[in-house]
Image (cartoon, rainbow, N blue to C red; front, side):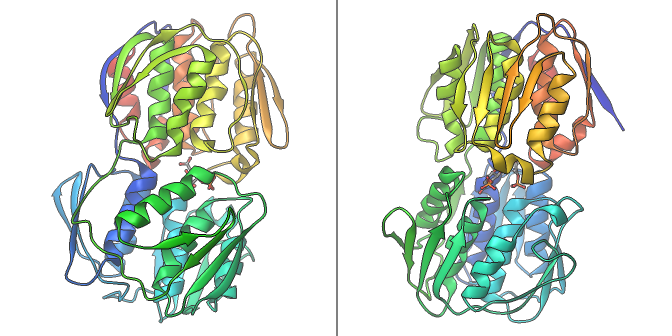
Length: 426
Ligand SMILES: O=C(O)C1=C[C@@H](OP(=O)(O)O)[C@@H](O)[C@H](O)C1
Ligand SMILES: C=C(OP(=O)(O)O)C(=O)O
């Protein structure tokens, strides 16, 4: 397995173009495919990474026509939920944004049996809350191995009605249902139970559904009213914003390396919740100017923060390694669902941060990090988790330095990350 060693960096400046947002890209691909037959949607600034390739492969297996104009401009032919091909199995790797939405959308549209599966880690990531909701709406779903986890077989379409979904483990179950229920023959009422996590991703789904002509009525905080037989309407062209979670690494590196670093692709009107990373970074002492279509980071002296980051679980990880450069104890709270992502991120973070000499407290749903007087050289394991690899690149700004295992795992969402890091940070 390859490693990368980074040490003694003191500057990070220049210009970086963010890749397209993973969350927007995979939603846009699926929504474009659901548009009426005969429509073509041109998706621009498409992310090309492991997660989007898994979605593209699934759509290809379902017979959806996708033409590559350039690697980042794709034309997707709509099929209105009448899939031209009937695959027996779809392999979705470890892409939550492919597995959860496709489970719901295929449960709403597919009539012949299909198995949805993923890699070893995906088979450990729970999906029962979504399956229970789909079954309540009439879907026929069976678990192929372990109850509550992929692989699962879908063998009969849903109808509609009242559907309850527990949103306390993942917002992706709710987003998936919001994308699927409008396709049903009957209207539905979606009722959210539990304390819903990662709420901005639900807002992102609602914003994109509006862009694709779907009408959803929110009734109070935890209920949606959804008419059936809706048609996704092609916006013809759709621009995918830069990835705000990926921006967090550049924002952090720009603070540690003094900037100025201009980050293109995110801006004041971003529809991604992770844009809030900037507010917390400023609270920590980072100097960031956010413009309409880019951000400029120009350094700062860091102090610890103690914050609830439930709304931004992905960018939140970046604060765990940034904490090593801040004065005081940084606590990241209300992130229990870190444990069911690419790896158990609370445990993985705590284990790897401790290698630097930091004092780390791993709670059930929080992490507190106090930097040591002097950071120690560390060999960091990454657990096939793109964010573990990218977060620990920040340790390159220490004298002690870091060796990161398997940096190529960043390809889940950002294949060029380490190449760009070495171009910009010295
Ligand atoms: O809907 C989405 O695009 C996502 C929602 C979040 O997951 P959870 O809702 O499981 O926290 C996030 O961590 C993931 O990377 C992408
Ligand atoms: C949690 C993540 O991915 P997924 O979409 O697979 O849940 C992530 O990208 O940090």
